[in-house]
Length: 144
Image (cartoon, rainbow, N blue to C red):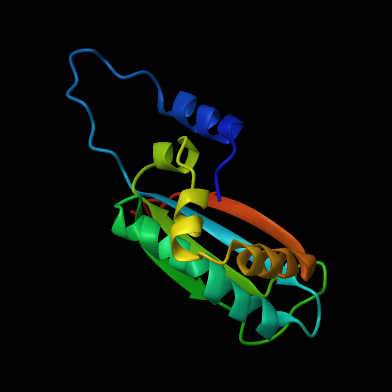
């Protein structure tokens, strides 16, 4: 789950250049919401596979310090089909650079799932029943 490089570059350019006289700023956590829209009738299957195969990888990245926190939500009721989403996973990354570094999570998957054939088959199924997925990087706004 990486934020596209172009988005990262735009964000960093918008922040402006750092002055040589300024001390290096402490990296700020970076929040991304990941939305999943699943084929009707397959929501429970998708969530079971997500928790079985993908969540442990995210938790391992949290143990490594790459991720600060992981949260998940689902709507309590339905909306319109065009605006429908079934699951939202919110990840607070250590910083924006962590979302686009060269970290290869497949190494973690191989450690966590020695039976790679089953893992790959289940992940393929998880994506077969997925109708849509989008990432929304967010930033907090001051209200005062």
